[in-house]
Image (spheres, rainbow, N blue to C red):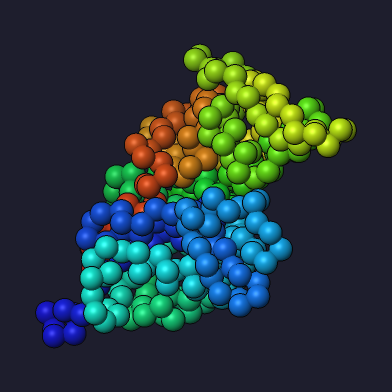
Length: 342
């Protein structure tokens, strides 16, 4: 261990469209929404994470809330850099330091990302004091986080439904054999709910309300064994302009999300059809693993299982499976050198 290693901290980052998670010393120390609030007059960032999320949809003209990542990639370079910098400063162990530590980072990225987008992530990381920056594909990180031994000559299929993208990949021998990335995930589900409320109930609701509906009563199928209780939703009546409340059920949300889920099913089927026969035989025995926040949608695993005729397993803590995998990679850099991009 060199003298400079004493000043280097290891952190693993899951830079997601919806949430950013950071692991330091094997613990998730930051779990915050990927949102920043900016003062338009001074151009300064005034809030980040949960605080900025509370402001979403409630700001006046001088404050703007920005989601720096869209579809899993950086859309606003400046805002994403500042968000990363502020969230890294939230890490309790680094707060106590009098100086800025150099950082060794592993960051996960979507598998369908381009070279230019990859470069943007790397540049952002280097500007916030990243001395060594490694990148790992999300499905690979999810597989490691779930506990799959990716180095074996055995096929495993991972479906990671995040905020901006759904990543589907078949992994064997520490590499991605075939993959598909579709821009249908949590954000599209939220927009589907907003559209459904407008067209079916003449009710205009915001993104935060739609997100709440998705979490509380969201479902992928109408015939759930134990459906959640109906929910009261408040918004603005499009006909009268008055505030109004309506009651909705999980069956209605299943109808609203049906088209988007069909497209995810098609993408899974397409990936299966491209899988080499020997790996397809392995997947028949091991089934499909699901991770990411979208996999928590009630009945989605059952629906995918019916479509593919394969067993479907949802990760233990699907929201944190990817960042956990990224953290494991960071701890065993030599073992996973082959799956990392520098």
